[in-house]
Length: 102
Image (spheres, rainbow, N blue to C red):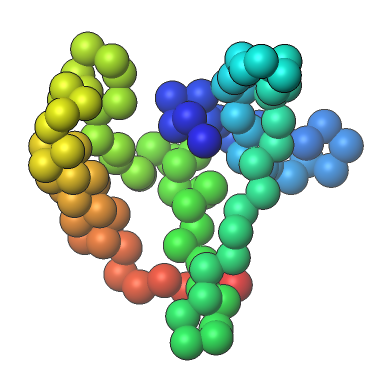
């Protein structure tokens, strides 16, 4: 999934917000269409937990590392990319007291 193309939209008929990806990938077989993204449930010792990512994304409480081409480290710099994602993870953990069951 392309994070630069991820957003939250509201279903017109139900009023329920959901993830949306407007990335269109071209390949020999055609092009993908914009689409709804369904969350994959996270389990901890068999118990489903929720990090409330959709709500936190909408409230701009999730900080990702720089993803724009001008700010992404060169492809050969895996350590720099890993460090950027580690910083993002640390911020996410620091701003979350504990995952909450739905």
